[in-house]
Structure formats: structure tokens, C-alpha cells
Length: 452
Ligand code: FAD
Image (tube, rainbow, N blue to C red; front, top):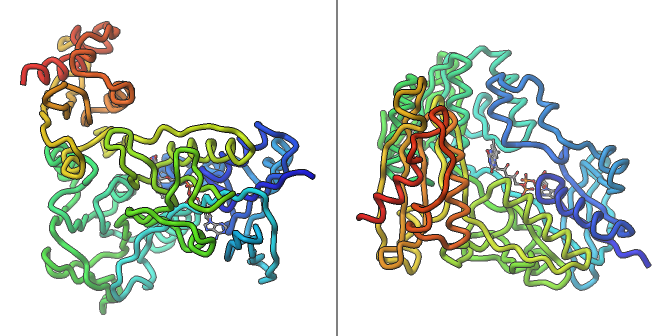
């Protein structure tokens, strides 16, 4: 009999799993249940749709259910929410959202790819019109429509993580007056303080107000119709025409719990290197799961698109009978904040206390990305963290002008391959004046690291 793989969630991880399973064994019956209206959508593009850089939200949808069926023979059911998993009977309970009909679906293998959802602060006023969170394309459409219809002049962005800051740029492009409220002592906590300070300068340069060490405690409608935010530790009270709350995400794990699947310490679904959960025949991938960190060797929760896509592929291959292994992640990421690119990989200084690497060296260099005499050279700062004794590279961060951030990929490779600062310093990198100084900043950073 044809084996059946049922996948729950139809975005990055889910559709990667479905496509890979079909490629490995085309005769498999592959079914995807997605509770929302879209599959295979690029949430990462939403800030650029809101700002107008991307004109049509439809461009963010890579694949439709019809295309999935025609091109890959994957049966996708949108507006279908999976309510529970019975791992003994190998059966799902599903609700067809449009009719409220409840039915069951059996599986041979099940892949949970239900992603994450925004963290919601437990404060009054979150349900007021003009207060937004951002996860789905529909959230992006709602934000853009609100701006077009209501012509707000000001917005408060609560949370200075990368999604919040990408939206800050989008709002400034639309000429809104923007204020950031961040509860920590700096924005962008995924990078170290030195790099975050440069980000804050860039925000100030672009007329963004920032209140650090500040938390919102409530939102009310003021007499003039604006939203009034009560802020502890900051300005006390602040008024704005709209609010975006972007304080991080949490893994969707409720469904996995119904199957008896165990969770990890970081709140995501626990999986092994084959993307298997602790329950037979059930796999998980993407933002709902914890992945192993390649440097620390521990499970971590860093929900990003490349890991969701790759993890989904591994889950799909293995559910189809394969034996693929996922090596883990480095949390490599990049973001653009106005005229700056910020990128990181491996461990940051903040991560170190949690690991065995107590003796590390940290170095930073600031250099040009082109020959000094060549026009439009951009400054970039590279920060490296290496093991003191062995000089093994553990982490890297870059901040600089446009076109500099993707240098992080070479550091990601270096960390993956256990390279030391010596190895890095000896790399034979390309040079011509429009592209780099004769000593690429990567080599210089490694060299300074070796001397310290
Ligand atoms: P999701 O994309 O969350 O998909 C899970 C799907 O499961 C959803 O469609 C959901 O509707 C469905 N689902 C949930 N529960 C059920 C159920 N019970 N039954 C049926 N279906 C269900 N990452 C980067 O690496 N780089 C970026 O630049 C970047 N930018 C981003 C910008 C924004 C605004 C956002 C929101 C995210 C961004 N990300 C970025 C993160 C990236 O989008 C996620 O890591 C990625 O989408 C995770 O994919 P996933 O398939 O695991 O989960």
C-alpha cells in the first residue's frame, strides 16, 4: 500500500519537507494541512512590502496549492487546522475552518512544521485598533491598509529586535515619526553591545527616537483619538497613531504536546539530528523546533528561514525512508537597517557564559571595504571571538555599509570547518580596488586576533 506522509504547516519547513519527500519517493502520498490562506510565503519580505519596496504582497507567495499539486503532486489543504495528533492510532484530528467540519486523517509518518507565533505582552490595550503584531502576510496587509486608510503620523515600535528594526526602516520610508521602546539596555540583542551601539547611532541619524530599559505596561485610547502607551522606565507616557509590538516569538508546541512529544529547555520541540521527535513516526522542523548549535553542541532556539527550509528538507527525506543528518545551526543572520548591514554567526559574547568556552579573546577592527583611494568605499567593523588557547574561531559579527554584510558567510564556513585565526589569516582571498583593500578586512581581523 502507498505510504502516506502528512505534514502540518505549509510554509518554509512544511513545504520543503513535502517537496523533498516527493523527490525521494514520488509514489508517496504527501498531504499538507495549512490553517491559513497561503503556503510557501516569504514572511521575510513583509517589511519590504509595507515600505513599498515590494509592490504587491502576491510577489511574496512562492507557490500556490494548485501549483504544488500540478508541479509536485503534493495535496495541500489550506484553511485546515490540525487540532490534535493521536500517535497510538497514527491519526490526526482536523478542522476544516470554512465549514467547521471535523474529520480524521491517518498517517504513516507525520511532520510537524507549525512554526512560531509572536509573543504577546500581557497588558491592557493589545486589542485596540491601530495596535499590530507581525507574523503573517495578512498582518503585513493589515498594517499597510491601516497606514493607507488612516494616514498615521507616528508609530511606536515595541521591541528592538531585527523584525522591529526592519519595520522601523519601513515606517521611516513612509515618513512616519518613529519611536522604539526596548526593555533591554540595547537594541538587537543577537549582536554584542559594541555593534548594537553603531546600530543605535544609525537609528538616531535617521531621526528614530529610542528608549532603552523601558517596558510598556498598557495602551489606551486617548481623548484626541491617538493611542497612549504607559511606559515604565522610559518617558512615562507616549502617544502615537499606531503601535507595532514585536517582542520576539515562541514556538507553537501545543499540537506536539497532544502527541506526547517532548519539548526542549528552550521551549521548542525536541528533535535529534534526523529531525525525529521523541515519538515514533513523528518529525518536526522549522520555527517550532529546537536545533543543535554547532559550536556549543547544545540545543538552541534561533528561529530563522534557512534553518526552517533545510530542516524541513531533512525531515521530508527521512520521513520518506532516507537517512539524512542535519549538522545543526550557527544562527547566521543578516539584516539591513537604513544604510547599514548587520550580520552575525556562531556565538556572541552573550552566548558564551552558557558554554564551555570560558577563555576567549575578542577583537574588533574597523576598515574600508574597498581600496582607500577607490570612490564610495564603505566602512565596516568586524568583531571576532576565538578560543584563547587554540585560536579556533567561535563567532563573528559584521556591521558596515551596504554590500559588506554578506562577508559573514565566509566566517560561517570557517566556524563550520573548525578553522582557526591562522587558517583565516592565510586564506587566498580575491583583491581588486573596487572590491577590497589588498588585505581584505577578514584577513586583517584574523591577524589582529592572532596578536591579541
Ligand atoms: P512558519 O513560517 O511560521 O509556518 C508555519 C505554518 O504552520 C504557518 O503557515 C501556520 O499557519 C501553520 N500552522 C500552524 N499551526 C497549524 C495547525 N495546527 N494546523 C495547520 N497549520 C498550522 N528569517 C530569516 O532567516 N531572515 C529574515 O530576513 C527573516 N525576516 C523575517 C521577517 C518577518 C516579518 C518575519 C515574521 C519572519 C522573518 N524571518 C526571517 C523568520 C522566518 O520567516 C521563519 O524562520 C520561517 O518562516 C519559519 O518557517 P516555518 O515553516 O518553520 O514556520
